[in-house]
Amino acid sequence: MTSVPTDSVLPLTFLGPEGTFTESALLKVPGAAALARIPSNTAAAALNKVRNGEAFAAMLPIENSIEGGVPATLDAIANGVELRIIHEVVVPVSFVLVARTGVTLADVTAVGTHPHAWAQTREWFAAKLPLATHVPANSTAAAAHELVAGTSAFQAAVCAPLVAEQTGLNILAAGIEDNAGAVTRFVLVAKPGSLPVPTGADKTTLAIPLPEDHPGALMAILEQFASRGVNLSRIESRPTGQYLGHYIFSVDMEGHIRDARVAEALRGLHRVSPDMRFLGSYPRADGQPPLIRAYNSDVAFAEASTWVESLLV
Ligand SMILES: O=C(O)C(=O)Cc1ccccc1
Image 1 (cartoon, protein in one colour):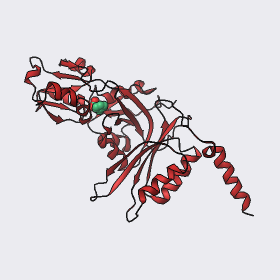
Image 2: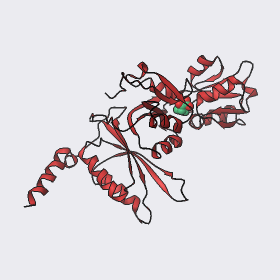
Image 3: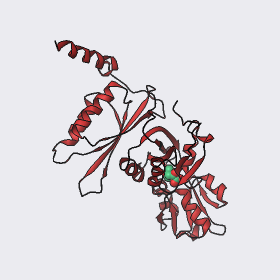
Image 4: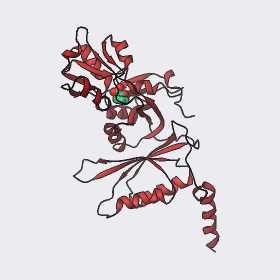
């Protein structure tokens, strides 16, 4: 099982402040609770702490089952000095609506929270507080802390029940998530150099810029996975910000770079999109092994290489 080195002299960082869902996810990583933890205000700030050696690794939300990818995290990982995902955690999240003492539901006209928390409570607000507007915050706990400080442009925040306990804010409503089965996926990101060992149930993450002046480039990219029997579990496009129409595809697939079919797909992808980034191979949170046909197994790839070698006489 991949975990963090418990003898690390460096702390871990996470999307903070104290009490975020991300901190709870970090505490589920084996060995993490034994290390020092420092909060970061944004995904980019957390990753920069890893890049400049202030932290061993950063925990960030990357995807949820309602809203899809978390843009701030996807963009921060795909750009800047290269990093690697070394661990994933998938957790169900439940939200509460909190406010300072004396504030009632009827007083709430604006609500502060992380955009993904707002997306997961939209129906509750449409039914109970249809006129309330959303004020985006860097995290759910950051919104709650603004309420405590009295500096907020909103009267209530959506956050984890734990934050209500930690801050003493009042719970106006609990269990306000629209979909009780919703889960969020978090990733632990470190510097390259600690590639987790394959477990047989792994995931690999890539950032693939769509090559320019290449009609059919997306098809050429997808072909690399299809022809090696590599199943994708997420694919999203993110604008690079350089100019309109320039995109990076953020992709998760089943398998480890040490699996022959994944390594073959990566070789093919690198030819089509040379600036592609490998963002890590790590154990799947659900431990589900992929379905691999015999002709895509490591043995079949090795046998095929041996066969070609034997012809080169
Ligand atoms: O804001 C937080 O507490 C986070 O950790 C990010 C987040 C927001 C909504 C759902 C899951 C994670």
